[in-house]
Image (cartoon, rainbow, N blue to C red):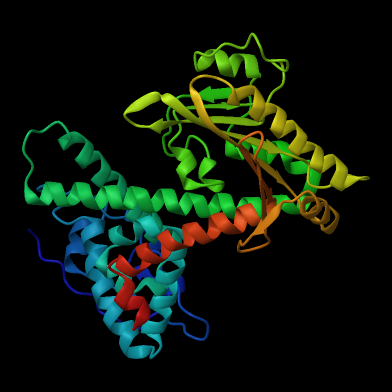
Amino acid sequence: MAHFDPARVVHFNPARVVYYDRFLHFEDKDLKISMPYGYSGLMLLESKYFDKQVNNERNDFDIFPVKTDLVSTISWEMINNELKKVISKIVSKGIPETKKINRKKIKEIQEERPYLVNYIDPQDIEMAGYLDKRQIIDKAKKKFDVAKEKVLNNSNKENFTDKELNDAIQLAQNELVSYINDRVIIIEKLKKLVNKSEQVESIIHNLFMTKYTKDDYYSIGKNNLWLLDDRFTTYSYAASDKRIQEVLTDINESYQDVDIVNDKPDLSLFFSHNPNNPERLKSVILEIKPFDFKSKSDRKKYHGITQLIDYVKAFKDKEKIQEVSGYLITDIDEKLADRLLGDDYTPLFSTESPIYHRHYDKLGISIFVISAKTLIYDAEARNKVFLDIIRKQNRLTNLLEN
């Protein structure tokens, strides 16, 4: 392999880093560097190897981005990796707050893409504050995708090496981190939507589960029923805005004695009450009401409870369904809260505002009334537990805390 001379530094200016005699910016070769406010300079790089690799037009070098061959024995990736080491030393010596700036950039990436932090190059960590954030993320993502493909290719093997097993475990952990991070995005989107009141009822409905669809198993990314409760991701059957007649038919129950077969609950969820007896079902019915009526808002929102009771009764008397409860999601203003308290609903503690609950003894059913904001902030609190665990266990923790 040809020898690559270290850089001869004249001045350092990440805004315009050039290669010797060719005036090519570093960013043209996948090394985009930027300096903090108040620092500037110019860096020139010279090498005998460059002299030998100048192309015929003398406007570039015959050097491959990643691969090498007998003629081009060094790639730009190899050059950049060496340059990062050199530049890192120069920057650390010349800028006292280098470590603080690096830590800030890495923390930004961790907040944005926590599932990629284990795939960031060590050299990128050492000078993260001066590299383009998008470039760091894109490189880490490529490594993540390569790792995923490698694990998938090995999945049919009968025996695994310790490294292959550890790689698979790390990938599974980071896939989970990616899923948790996606939840953050959904929660932030909902926070903005609830302020638009009635305009977002259908959007929130679709965020839970797309309207007019049904499903018999859960997979990550298919819907967002975790917003209400993580337990609701274990359903054996789910229907969104489907007629009661169709729902009962799908779970092999008769609808002959049901008066409201054409009514469509917003969400109808069914769970195997006992894993050893999948025919014994538990059901949850969800109704979403507009958050801002122009008049008589509390009366119209309260009508959602009447609907829920009718829906619950339609399912409760069926042989397979052993337990049913209903959830009304809306905006709980002072008038609605007073109406709920006057009807024997009990306020239960929650992070934003109370969840109101009543058990109807004669009917044998429970109804919960939840504010949309409470729903969001409770989901955020549950998700934060996962995020805190993830952040404490990744390899960048010491860098961020020191």
